[in-house]
Image (cartoon, rainbow, N blue to C red; front, side, top):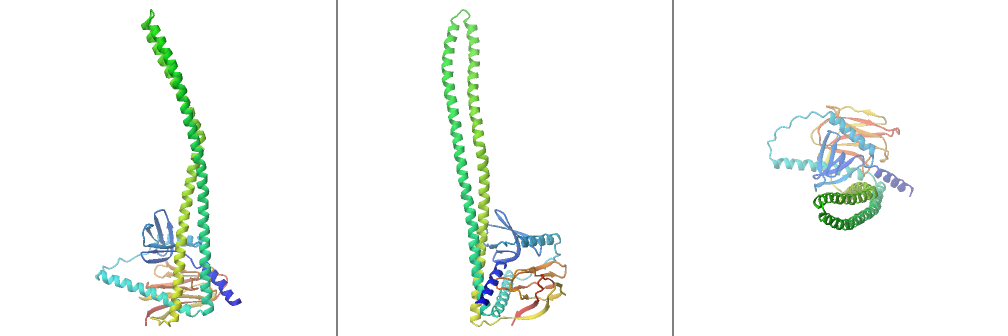
Length: 414
């Protein structure tokens, strides 16, 4: 039991660190080792190798499988690499005008995609066959455990966001009640002021009309009538001013009582919107992780099926370069011809996270092409490409000085 248990623990550690960058699938093509920024409407995909940023609408149905790396430091390193590449863009020769038809281009693209997928599958199968039953089971069990842990973690995070939203909504309801109470008090004060003013004005007006008629019958009637009329008009204006002041006092009281609740309600609404956005981001991350895990499971099942059916390999490998050692080094340049090629790094750490890394640089301008750090879900440090050129490696080891072996091979049909 001791040995399989050790492998299972190793596998759990391995799967907990199998992501070293963001991933996103656009138009059927999966982009790895990228930095993905987000807004309400768009995804911003930053390609560290080229310094190019692409903007894609979140409404596009062919933009899927988004995975955001939890390692903030690794993402910051990718963004810094992108900024450096953006500041010093590579010189690109203008493409020659193609004389072939769109059908030929489509077929070439499909063939290129098929070769890359085939090279990746056969490389993984070769690795899978060499693991042995004990390590294969440990990797499978570790994947299942990691999947349960990630789903439980995401579910707890989403439930936490929902709980915060419910708490904020409850606070908002309390403030709305206070605002409604303040509004009711203001309406009652205004109604009371109007009622009192109207009653007083009616009685006073009747008295003034009677007095004005008496003056009109007096010796100086016309003069007195006009003077009294002006006086009465001024009095009525004053009474209306009293009513206006009462209404103003009611409005001021409402502002004093309701103003703080309105301000807090606006703040709560902003907090709710923030929590909703974070909850949606967590949901998208959970969906992306679930899809990625299902992809891992499907690939392992495919490898098991191919191994059981004694799969016959379609590609053969020709070694182009090889390096071994325990220390950091910069390798000599290796020339990669046309076609698919593979770089594999073997290290006896079984995928334990470390500072060990291999960075491929384009020898023509010293720009980083790609970087390999921790292992993938199969415990591999392997990548396949179809980009010809002249490259060299920067191998950076950690303090453990565990021996490594790196092989670059060209893959061609048998």
